[in-house]
Length: 294
Length: 299
Image 1 (cartoon, each protein chain N blue to C red):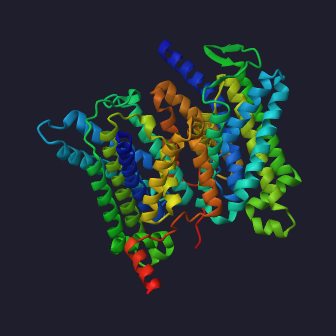
Image 2: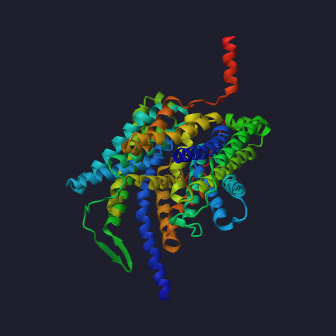
Image 3: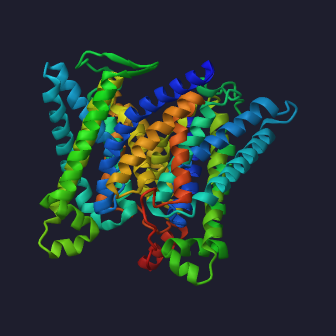
């Protein structure tokens, strides 16, 4: 039971990460490879609050709430700091620059003795639980879905479709790119704070470039630009390694090999992923069925 | 001159020598990046893995008792053939799908080789056999090892060969034509697919050579060794102006020297961060690189 709860917790955290990366990569079309960096920022600041600042008197869930808030804010601020210079770049150059920043963040944390540096950050209070993780999952999804329906969301989508056309229609593309980037980074930081309080131990090497790629794989598998796709992708790719574990040591050793082949095959044969840019809506699904039967 | 200042200069020259040796390696890898980018506008993330493959082919050749002068070309050809295969199987079908899908595919290929290497060879670093007896030379207080000299000489020779190949042969002319305008080159009767395969071969062969040299320099080889040097070589290519062959050499040397100066005079753990910091600076200040010309993007 513990194992399942832990798995469900991780799935929730990865859903937040995937949905937030999807906002940057899939919906705004700005290819970022530094998501693990923002995740790390959130995890470390959230954990630092828990270890050094949190008043004992407050109940755990309020502390977790504050910790998530701090994780979100600091990650969003670092997103702003990184986004403003980087978002002037396009396409593959942006990917490399964000990758670079992700690695720089990791190296900086590695050199910070206050948070343990290469020894890792220990004794983080265990505040995360299933309820609060899924509370934040719902908040993230609802926020992103509603953002897309409004003016800002439309502007963000138009950048993905055609940046030059959006520019000439009077959309201040730089502002909206930064907006999407900052919000995405913020939610990654929130996921980080939840992750820190769930794991109770953080190590800079847990936030390598490989994790950015895995989160990217989640949204590509689900379908770049689709929120439901990101959710499904995150669920599949968190549960798949556990299934592989049951199939024996050797198979689970080859997890990353399987992932990379999956990534290549997806790109070669179905670059739009499972859902493409479409959203899957349960209500609509049943409605359609009714129409079909009646 | 006071003693302190003298020692400062000895230190400086020592780091410069180390930096040039390291930079030569980056330059060799960066050449492949730049050539492939120049010809099909693809950031070949898997390029660092060709370097790893070269190192391991060299490793197994040397372990099985082959002399260095045979192991070295074997590693180059082996890495080149792997690259040609990768290009045929993975990159060719994706070539017209756009840059981002191609980039993701390259990322996948890179991860595939790394973890395949870990699965097949094992994640632990292998001790690279000593191919030539190590000897150190002293110039004043500055130490130069024989391996460092070999690295710089081999790099120089390979670059001269590459320069000759690109500028003074028919294949080189075809390569330049293809990178200039692929469709027009095809209309002129150049088999562009063949030229692209050949470019991959040359680039990966240079990376394979770098792999063997690094194996000799640090005496280790491991499946993950390609990741960081691969990224840094990419940075070197961007620094010099991606797509420009002399630019890769300049970028590689500058990066190697800069890195060693940081290690020597500042904090050694920031070694990897400085490369990325340079990348971001150059992208913001002069995205076309040191030798690049700014080109306006057309709609």
